[in-house]
Image (cartoon, rainbow, N blue to C red; front, side, top):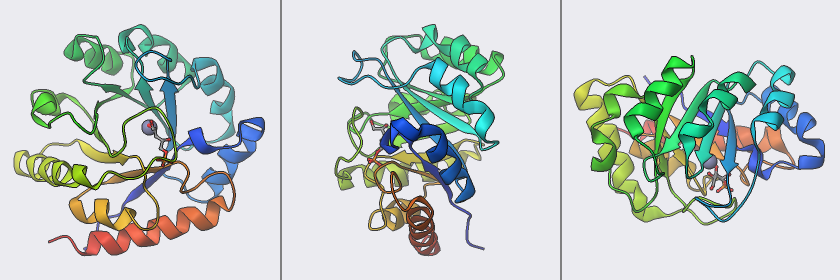
Length: 226
Ligand code: DX5
Ligand code: ZN
């Protein structure tokens, strides 16, 4: 049986002057999750959305909100994003925090915890936490900006994570973020990704058409898995 791949459009590439409409376009197009990139201008050299924006778009759709915290001190924002209505919160293993404490705080706030690895960070840095998270996010670009080229050198780490999760029978889903478009979706699906994030591959125009094309490409790639 072919696994169903989930597609998570990233609002970072939406037209912000009509963010609400773009949220609804993605929902109507069948987005499985909406990916929300949170940047603090310190962990990464860019600033994006905070809890107030998340709260304002939350009533527009039932599609789960998947928030990716690219911030130096993620522990300081758990309560605010939980209150804003996110469904999962992924935090970087490279941020300045006690990872286990932050993951527990996320879980205790009623939100699904996830852990993110930058392209250069090995899987072993997350290994001790894999039993405690619902989501492992592997970056295929260095975080900070949409529209960067996919880093093919990260593919072996996706395969390694897939093999590890399956071998240990972990409940954790495997997500990939960065440079995912029609041409790269099959590569990460074949390598074992469950959830594909795509910003500039889906937004801002022809959202339904782009999402469908990425889903078809990803499903074709997933068939190639043994
Ligand atoms: C990058 C963000 C990504 C970004 C992806 O720092 O974490 O979620 O929006 O954008 P694309 O798909 O254009 O690489
Ligand atoms: Zn992201």
